[in-house]
Amino acid sequence: MSTADLLAKFHKIAADPAAQKARYLAEGRKIVLTAPVYTPEEIIHAMGLVPMGAWGADIPLNESKKYFPAFICSIMQSILELGITGAYEGVSAIVIPSLCDSLKCLGENWKYAVPSVPFIPMTYPQNRKPDFGRAYTKAGYERVIADLEKVSGVQFEQEKLAESIRVYNAHNAVMREFAAVSAKHPIGAGERADVFKSAFFVTKEEHTALVRELIDALRGEEPKAAKKRIMLTGILADAPKLLAIIERNGLQIACDDVAACSRQYRTDVPEDMEPLEGLAAKFAAMDNCSVLYDADKKRVDKIVQDAKAAGAGGVIVVLTKFCDPEEFDCPLIKRACEAAELACIVVEADRQMENYEQAATMIEAFAELV
Image (tube, rainbow, N blue to C red; front, side, top):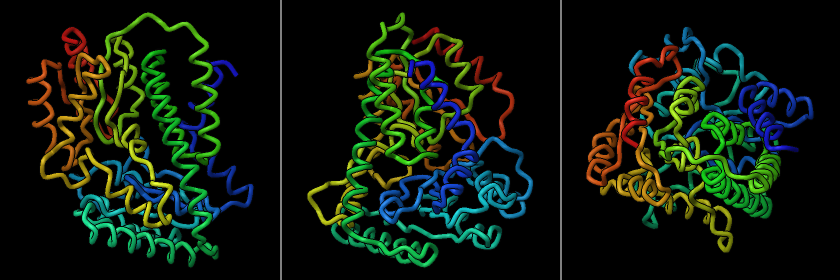
């Protein structure tokens, strides 16, 4: 397929997850929803189930407001809204991690608001690096396995988890490669987002093959004229109107620190360890994320280092409204960027935004500084 055809395919998958859900159910496969972030998809995959991302949607929020206050992340609100209104009917369960207060609330509300879809908690430790932290993480995975066995009727096998870990490590590698290649062979911000977003809605084997084909197609083309290079950071950055503004101002995403994009793929599972131990080791090794405990805030320095290494002239912080972990990091990121002579702006976004005119004005001025 040509680059244009491949990008159109990624867009179709990203824009219509319901169609992917219907396809898998029609094939007789069982689907387990995975809420953000760092849900142990490898375990779900190893049991022959289809992990499918649940990151919410740009929809009106009505029913979920009966369970959540107004001042909570709209990603969580829209996930619950989709659950209440039946968008997830037919799936076997949802796994929700405990990495922020809003996620904890989502899990507790889900039990009562969406009883037709079983809620499986994944409880992570804050102190994930010491031996006791790894043991706690492993115990959390074992609980997820037991709950999945109950809802699916499928028996977990360590050997199959080892196979799934190899599949996921291969997908991590191809996504890291795509991020690097797309920066050298510029594609639009919206097209880039489609590649990352589509990964949540198809199996990793399917997605790896498609991304590999896209990388080969991009490498076979002449690079386009260079644009001004920037870095994105945040939890979610897939709003079409926002991405269109970035493109309209001649800005190229050279790299990102977005939880729904590159943050997912930085760390592999060691393949020379017992599989569950390896998964726990992966979580222990993960760093540089707002929802992972880090007293030294090393993430801030990494953003500057990555931006400089990618030749970015500035950083756009896409701040999900009411996301406390990201809000705490914002002043530190801005200060670090200023010290490194990188332009930096904070653009607030949520699932309910229709008008991005204020963001357009900010990005237009930002583009002059990059």
